[in-house]
Length: 381
Image (cartoon, rainbow, N blue to C red; front, side):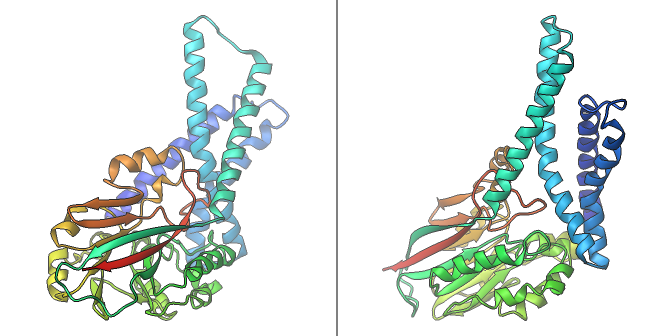
């Protein structure tokens, strides 16, 4: 039921925004103009490409569905910027009318439309180029032992982290390979994948066998991951099995003791509204693990950060926010989350919320560079 509500809200907003852009686009391409007759069919093609491609690829992923998804994914980014820029133009026209200017004439319309389209193309193309080049960020933290035994591990411990890779149709093996290469370049003791590793449509992942790229990951202590909301938007069990078959151990309300360092992984909250089952409360999970050493917590969505502090977690890793992914959506995520990107220290617990290594929906990023994080964890008596 909740999925139906989310689905309805998304496509209601998508439909309304597309209709607004269509109506305002008629201003530039009137029906009696040279290109007026092509405007409607071309507009419908780009608007319907994304939902049609996503729906069809679940049944039979192929070159046609992949092309539809790619075309529609670029439209998602363009749609946002068309709406924002057209709204700005409409506000300006309203102000001009208030000042007594009734019309800008055909030349003014043509110039305005050309500038607007040019800005959208630049934003989308620049964001696409930006999204293809994940960067490596370095973070050093000190974890006090507080009387606990030190882990029998290198000190500092090198932990390579990636969140929100979104392996799927718009990822491509080349970009996934760059992410894997960045993770390996840190010579990690440990690799952690903090949710949304697989996009909601797992079939393209299976068909194109992206897992063979994941098998290139190198880590002395292994590769561990948790679920994100997008695994649950698709087939979480199939996605998790696929990752497990490719040397990624899933921690689903589960934990592992790595020579005195405890890695605890939580199920994504989406578990509840998709399956009806509740994930374990963090105190119950901590009680089940009974850690006697430092604790790193993987929790995909950075809500209720105080819970980790209350449970005396040393370091929490999260993702999910994408830092908005597209300007100016980062201002919204900044209001929703206590921390939507970067490092935070709160009541003795340290946090890092990643902006993500991949993209969702559209392969475009205009708020930040996608990132892989190299965390050097030093244990201190």
